[in-house]
Length: 386
Image (cartoon, rainbow, N blue to C red; front, side):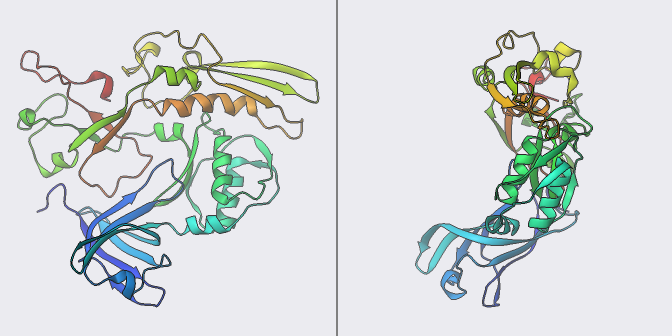
């Protein structure tokens, strides 16, 4: 029998450039692995409690590899081999014992730093260009790549592969969805080039619940249940809101409305496009529709006047020639709004480890309201539960 917070680490091996392998599993205090849809690669760090001065005796010089395997009990093992690139927080804990943090990252980050892209792509889908850069310059296939629309002419000017692919993501329109919100990131399963809308168009991978002590032993309609290993695995240990909303920032950054002034150098014409978040809301995929538009989400409960002025964010863009269309009118304004939408309500929660979770997955959550019970019934935070 295991507890919700249990995990297994099979090995933590430091591979030296001298060919020596040292198992650090008895010397580590922490092992952290990081995934994010905003980071091109995964990274990790380990806190080492070192009584044998491995930094000197291996030595550790930033050219090593760290190999480790871990899992949540009963799940498949995840095995990673990352490059060590930095030591920090090195301190003498007591006589003959030091502690430090080893930072490591996927090897593609090193490849990216040493490679530049200078190749002409004419009349290609952005997804095809990204796929070619990924395979040709990083030698790593995509785990998931979402097909885009529109044919582009692009010549990266000696950019790194990561900068090139992130540039492509910023201009990509999905073939299936209408928005412009592609992200490029890596999980332990591999690299992904997908739209936020495609991530939203999935079922929640799980429902996480903050279970106060006074309801742990009772069944409720909100999903609370007696304490078991299974219910503990989906319970918040702690949480905090990094951000709730900042309507002034949203206005300034063009979430509610933004303005595009374009000009056509060939036809000697210019014009303007005004983007409206409320007007365009139903064109795009959301995790759940808001109540104003007939859905269930309580995050947007009343009509707003924030979209009546269009100059929060302004862009001045040329249109491409007939055979060199850049599709600025399709991607730039939705992306300005949609990427700002992601910055509004941000919850940071600590939950028991689950090695099958991946960055980019959708999860639902149930949070109790801080107000007093009504008729002995626990109140739920409607605005922040979905």
